[in-house]
Amino acid sequence: MSLASLLLVGCSSTGASVDAGGEPDAATVFDLGADFSGTRNPSGVWSYGFTSGGTLAVSEFRPDGFSAQVGGVAFWHPDGDAGYYPYVAWNPGASTITDSSGSWAVRAGEVAMEGSASGQYSVVEFVAPADGRYSVRADFEGIHFRISTTDVHVRQNDVPLFDANIDGYGGDPAFHPVQGSSPSATYVGSVDLKVGDVLGFAVGIGADGTNFNDTTGLLVHIVRL
Image (cartoon, rainbow, N blue to C red; front, side, top):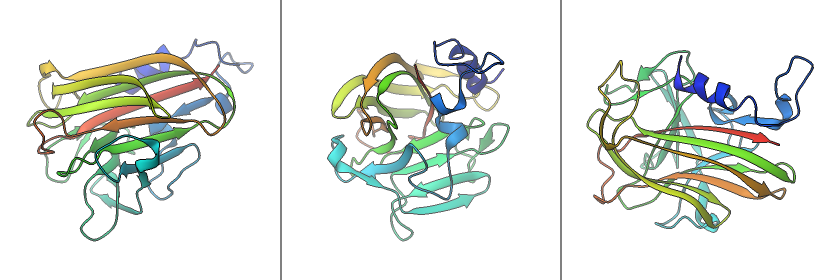
């Protein structure tokens, strides 16, 4: 079973409203991979972008403006000229694939993120569509074959909920052995949100201060309880 499938199974009994078949009402479930758009930004409750500088304040968020598909991977970039980094990418397929350079592997439905050499963060934002309590799970994993070294974050507006470091490869083991001191990091929690509140999921350049070989995977599953 894929990691994405495990996440769906793990979140199926959160206490959200259910339909006659016993599944959560689709209107209450938000899954970054399933909802991702390679052509629209924002796309529903999700926005893909970056910070204008090296801080994670909501006011520093800027939406990506340029999309492109390279091989099987869909990318969002700041712009179409020199603005390659930071990027937010996505695998829309049904199985793990590598990027066009063969440097990293991204699972089915997984998002791949990388910051810029100047310290800008790659950011995905979830904007609450209604007041309520939300169950949140975010799984980060290093997916670069040359070992990702990044810092990862979950924030509610400007309040930190989770901070961790990725140092290793924690992706699909069929493409590279899992290795490193902290190849993955997971946040699980419940938060009270007002309509318009922001949950931010961010990837930075890590303690080494570079974005070399830093591609980091992200899966997010949110249920309004």
